[in-house]
Amino acid sequence: MASFKKYRVGAKVGLADIDPGDERFLEDCESDSEQRLRLDALAESLDELQNLLHAEGKRKLLLVLQGMDTSGKDGTIRWVFSRTSPLGVRVAAFKAPSIEELAHDFLWRCHAVVPRSGEIAVWNRSHYEDVLVPVVEGWIDKAETQRRYAHINDFERLLTETGTVVLKCMLHIGADEQRERLQARIDEPAKNWKFAMGDLDARKKWGLYQRAYARALEATSTDAAPWYVVPANHKTHRNLMIAQLLVKTLKDMKLSVPPADPALRGLIVP
Image (tube, one colour):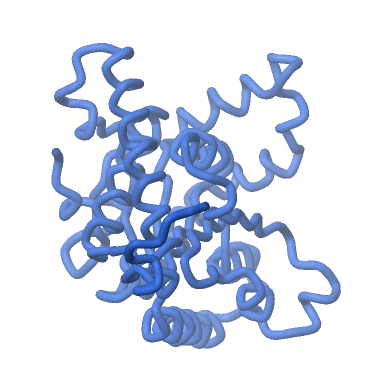
C-alpha cells in the first residue's frame, strides 16, 4: 500500500507539491478489473468498520471533501460508500448560504450536520467554502480571512476533543482535466443538468482559487484535523486512495463492540 505521508499537508507538503495526475495508489493494479475488485473489497471493509463504529456508539467520523468543480465529490461518495449501510452514513451538501444562514456566523450551519455518535458524516463541500469564494471574490479582507482560519481550527478542535475524528480531503485536479469534464457535461445530453454557467466564471479564476486553496490548507491542516491532497485526475485512483485512507483511519481507532449484557448468558429464545 502506498504511503499517505506524501499527501498530508504540513510544513513540507503543500498543494503545489502534488501532481493531480499522480496514480501511485494504482501502481500494483494490473488491470481495470483488478482496480474495481480492490475498490469493492475496500468498500466491504468500510461497511464492516462502520458497523463497529455504530455498535460502539461513542465516537464519530467526519469526512470533508473539497475541490474545484468537476473534481469528483459526488462520484467519491457514490463509489467509496457503495457497500455501506445508509443508516450509518449521512451526507451533507454545502451550497451557497441561504438568507437564514447568512444571518448567522459562517459556522452556524455546520453545527447542525456534525456526525452523531456512531455515525460517519460526509460533507460535500464544507465550511471551507467561506475561506475560498469570499477570498477570491474580494468579499473579505486578509484580517477577516485569518480570523476565519482561527475559528475553523477552534471549531475542529472542539469536534476532535468531543470524540469526532476529522479527515479532510482536497480532490486535486488539473485545469486541462477540468476542461474535459466540463466539456463532457455540455456535449453529453445526459450530463447537461450538471453544467452551470457559473462554472465557467469560476474557471476563469483558476489561479486565484488554487492560491486560496493552498493558503487555506496550510493554515488549517493540524495534527488533530489533517488535510490530505488527493490526486484526482484519475477517478479510480481518487476513490481507491480515499477508501484506503478511511479504512486505515477507522482501523487506527481500534473500534470494538460493547460488552454483552450479562443477562444474555445462557438465555434460550422460546
